[in-house]
Amino acid sequence: MDYSVDVVGDMVAGAASHYCFDHTPFGGIVIPTLRRAVSRTPKGAVLSGPTGVLLQMSDIKLIPNAPKEKNNDR
Image (cartoon, rainbow, N blue to C red; front, side, top):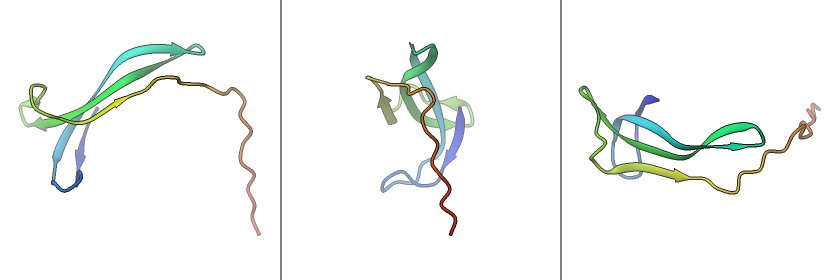
């Protein structure tokens, strides 16, 4: 997934590429448990550069038929 970032922390970023790895099934749904965002230039992603965001997920629990929030219009 490619996208543009306005501000990341104290620095202005620009274009980024988002990569998903380590796809693991949880309750029959496959979820990427490792995500990495890196800078992107007009020539493509800078994979050898620093990682802007690294997200590692574990202990994922899917709750089937979770109750929906009620609309409390007044």
